[in-house]
Amino acid sequence: MSILAGLKLEGFKSIQSLGKEGLTLDRINVLIGENGAGKTNLVSFFKMLNFMTTVSDGLQSWVGKEGGASTVLFYGAKTTPKLSATLQFQNDGGCFEYHLEMAPAAGDAIIFLAEQAIFRQEPSARGHQSSTAFGTGHKEPKLREFAQRDVQNTPANTLSKALSNLRVFHFHDTSDTAKIKERGYIGDNLYLHGDAGNLAAMLHKTKHDSPDYYFRIIKMIQQVAPFFGDFVLETTDTNREKILLRWSERGSSDVFGPNQLSDGTLRFSALATLLLQPEPPSIIVIDEPELGLHPSAISVLGALVHTAAEQSQIIMTTQSPRLLDTFDSNNVIVTTHESMSTHGRFATKFKRLDAEKLTSWLDEYCLSDLWEKNVLGGKPSR
Image (cartoon, rainbow, N blue to C red; front, top):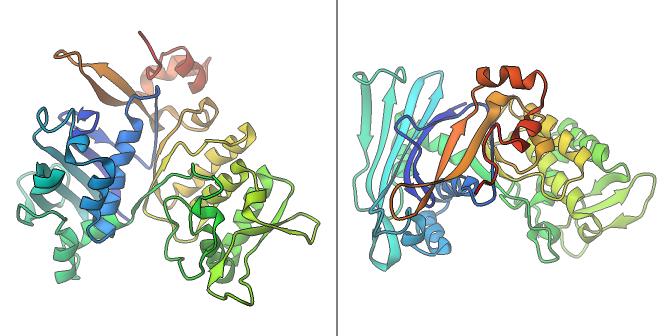
């Protein structure tokens, strides 16, 4: 498994720069900060990576949905002529880096100025490395193309696998028209979608292929929703290819549809499935998973994240003090929206907490107390 150990990023949305050394990442990374500080923009960068490495023409599609290249660049193309990023992955084989530089092009599209895969035996071995450049001027990444040419354990192959195993999840939409509430194709079960639109298909597969994991998911849902009995994951006689997320109450034979589950229970069901599935993504990025959950469910969610971190790397944003208290200080990254010295502009800054400096504070207070007192930072100020 490849771990994303570090990230350097410049010129993306509200992020002018992550600094010379970039952002160091661990197995669990919890981003906190005031509203509008820019936490979601870091999630957005990971979503861009997800699109461009797993979807055909994914980069241009994503840029178009965002409103064009100018909206992706820090204060627009006039201020920021290009964005650049370096992702550093580590596994037992060494250190692998994926470097990219992008600039706006005609039609408000975006093109690559540079794309490169780098391998080092050790992260600090600057003089002992091999690299492959993928050219310039292309509109979609060539990493996967180069990886497919050589199925051996090349830097391109390793990086392509690592990036395709990075997935972003956002379970906020539980409206009447949300995909999670609609009938879906039963065979759409290779991986859980970012909006959990194929939750029924994923649960159906898990129940039949990995019943022990399915049982754990059901027990976890029952822990926060005692009335819940089980999912009823069956097709109909008239349509064997479509499946709906139906369920039953504990101790009852009555069957209900997804519209009769509360939003919180529906979101928690998606979270439990994501974090307890038998083959989770290597890197899981979740945006504010606590939305709509009961306080007791939030505490259970924290325990689920710790369990999932045994197999996956977790990057998560939150506004919940209760969820924050389920983690250690060294898991936390504080996000702030700071004034720049010129033109009255602001930029997003990220800083990992220093556990040693907080030792005396944590003898008397929990993390949420320190967040409220603004000892950690990341709280609105004038």
